[in-house]
Length: 393
Image (cartoon, rainbow, N blue to C red):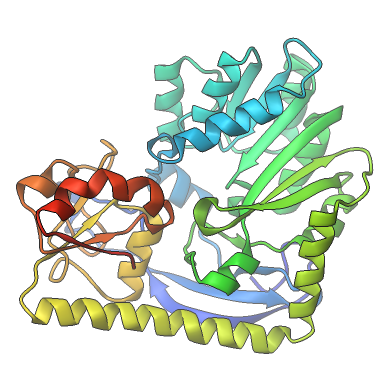
């Protein structure tokens, strides 16, 4: 991609990881012999607005209709309930319409429905289709677009709330997606968008560059982008989920910026004054961290330690792919999701049930879903009580 996805000015590449396989191309045993496709993975920044995005994107169908296994209901379940409750309190309409774009397995909509809302999910993946049937949730199994927004508007009326949690930064066209939001949103409605925050990534290196996430968002370039499409920022705040995220609420009517929003904008402005140096340092530290992790792990293996991993997350598998760690280094990966168990990672590591960890305990376990460490680590007390060691990559 040579142009910025927000303002269409030229972009400047600043970080490359080479060509890597898709992390969720998890293969059945019968598929292991098939050729493995690799795709460029790197970051570029806009020369005008400083937006950060991938240097090249993968066709959406390749990811979401062929190689997509993420199930949001396995982690941070309390987070989604709290989110639903916080917005349900503000509804004046007794039966408001809530539309969740990128609804995944429907957990957020499940909570909204229990709180008395009319709900509708939009998600193109087969995983979402199967989950919506189990939960009996209404789903449109397509990509969101202005045309689809108009159809929903005609059939259901405007949405009082549209949620897009970790969806906006994955879509093929931000312009078309946002036009759809503007069309579907009620005149007094709210659009909630959550994206991993690139400022948090710079500060803590607690995120991963991977093929599914096209945009690495900052607040400053998003405000004029949304305004051009008829959506005004109402609030912006950071949350801890996914290694540090940015939560935006938007609507049709202008709203004064809060002190929290102004503070975030001021922090970004300070970085923009020395943006090339900031990105060079970020790239250097990120690559160094991956190399340190690889050397540490290989050192343990050379000492005769057995190594396995926990949670076959897209981010974690991407780190293994960055670091050229495969079935020769990692014995297995345990997983709670039935759609992943019995498959193999792109580098040939078998994925087994979580129960396998205690039956065949390794000396060292990598927690690949490191962004949910606070939630997952308490579940692993039986493993650590037997002397097992856990490493966060």
